Image 1 (tube, protein in one colour):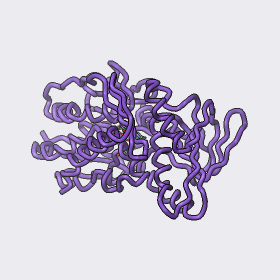
Image 2 (cartoon, helix red, strand yellow):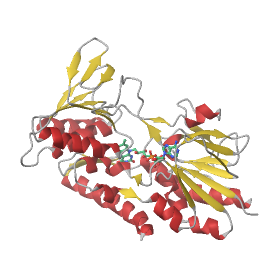
Image 3 (cartoon, rainbow, N blue to C red):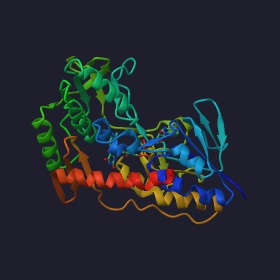
Amino acid sequence: MSKHLVLAGGGHAHMVTLSNLRRFTEKGHRVTVIQPSEHHYYSGMGPGMLGQTYTPGAIRFATRHVVEKMGGTFVLGRIVKIDAAAGSVQLESGDAIPYDVMSCNVGSQVPQNMINGALDDIYLVKPIERLLDAQRRIFELASRKKPSVGIVGGGPSAVEIAGNAWKLTRKPGLHPAAIRILTKTTIMPHHPEGVRTKALASLKRRGIEIVKNCDVQDIRTGRVTEVSGRSQEFDIVFVAVGVVPSPVFRESGIPTGPDGGLLVNRYLQSTAYSNIFGGGDCIHFQESPLDRVGVYAVRQNAVICQNLMAALEGKALQAFDPGGDYLLIFNLGDGTGIFYKRPILFGGRLAFIIKDYIDRRFMRRFQALES
Ligand SMILES: Cc1cc2nc3c(=O)[nH]c(=O)nc-3n(C[C@H](O)[C@H](O)[C@H](O)COP(=O)(O)OP(=O)(O)OC[C@H]3O[C@@H](n4cnc5c(N)ncnc54)[C@H](O)[C@@H]3O)c2cc1C
């Protein structure tokens, strides 16, 4: 019997399902993909896009185009609620879309509790496409003065944003930016000492200032204020304080993990609703909570695709195995990177060349569906 599959978000964990959409439609199922943007941006290359190593076209996947080409329906919109009992999703527009089976890959967002007022000259590191606005604004400022750029946060995205913002204003005719990272403890606090040392050395060598033990409580246009009352002024502020899963699940009363991620079992299936699946940053994997890195979203692809088909066809589900240690490579913005996969750690040009190769290959694989 023909059923309706709804995909909420066309993120990293839905790429294989999107590539195989025709298999679903050929079996007579309808597929609807809902996403607030016609493109999905690959976050791993986002800082590189800020620094103009990549064009926006090189790091995005044409979700609407591919979905429609494969015989699915694309709905430009944002899911705000799931009515699991009724089997429908509600969009920001007020529309409701019924489903038989659905899968959530709606990602994560930067918490905004420190921010007061509008996001003028304040750039969250997600959604990735907003980094393009930041790039334009930095260019505009740097063409007439030395822009001051504050980065609140200290993890990998803060480091990558700092390094790539640095690169952006090294172009002839621009005033080099004064860049300062404001971090609660130190940079890369959750990474091994060797990674931290290499990142610190790279940033310091380029004059990027790191202010440690900085407990920021208020961010507003032009100013960042710490709990101690100390304030610092900036032309532009990036907010890179980590991410939390989409609030959709809590607001829908669907069981979540402690941070609000959709609670899923080993089949990447909601622990309460057997027709709801999910992957990527928006889930909490019950067996062993996963780091919010794209690597897991990518590893989940095949299982999600397989299990969505199984759920529609009444077949057996496949369990997800998160696998072992994963490779991390950080783009420092000056043509170098830091490569880390336990126990291997090195920095330099080779690290960035490997990252660039892996990332471009990932994009090419899925962008090939567009032609
Ligand atoms: C600057 C930066 C750099 C990073 N670099 C790396 C890296 O190099 N390697 C790595 O492994 N990880 C990296 N990460 C982490 C990585 O971004 C995430 O783990 C990854 O994006 C998770 O993929 P996802 O598909 O779950 O979410 P996302 O990439 O956020 O995708 C979610 C999708 O859902 C859509 N969506 C959002 N809300 C809704 C809604 N309500 N309804 C419908 N659709 C919605 C969005 O438009 C988007 O297309 C980085 C993160 C950042 C911020």
